[in-house]
Length: 186
Ligand code: HEM
Image (cartoon, rainbow, N blue to C red):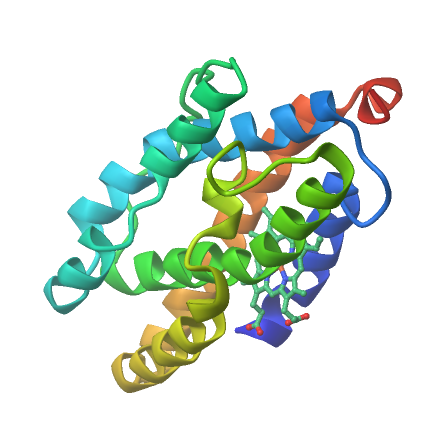
């Protein structure tokens, strides 16, 4: 999965441009982008994920954290993105892989936002901070469970398709939000 999505990860990482100094306006757009995505994605996942994943998912939704951050920063939630036709349960697992993985980058983003903008989990970085120091353990647990469930080649193919499609939705969304390069430094 990681190999199959590596080039998309690199592209979105470049697009978000959070490894170099960024301003409050750029951070706000990124946060709003995740909000616009999660508004559509979380209900979809709740419908499509396999039954055995529902408790995991229900305990780890993160839209409320984005909302908390947006409120703290005086911002609003943009309209939801449009997701493509319903996905299969295995494709949904691939999609979940993308968002679970994004929590790893979130640790980096939360730390950068603290250094550069003075934000904290209680003020503006609740979403990216997520589970904080428990993030890596959670990620490992997720991968173990994913391995157990994606046993057939068909299931793996579907999951990869779901992951690629999710990266594509996110890339399109952020391209639209961040295309004004001049504002990226604001
Ligand atoms: C929409 C944005 C992003 C998504 C969807 C995303 C998704 C992912 C996924 C799926 C993984 C797991 C890879 C694996 O299987 O090991 C991952 C890992 C990681 N991501 Fe991201 N990511 C995003 C943005 C970022 C950004 C902006 C950064 C850095 C500022 C970042 C840094 C990392 C790091 C450090 C790892 C762990 C180490 C590695 O595998 O390279 N990510 N991300």
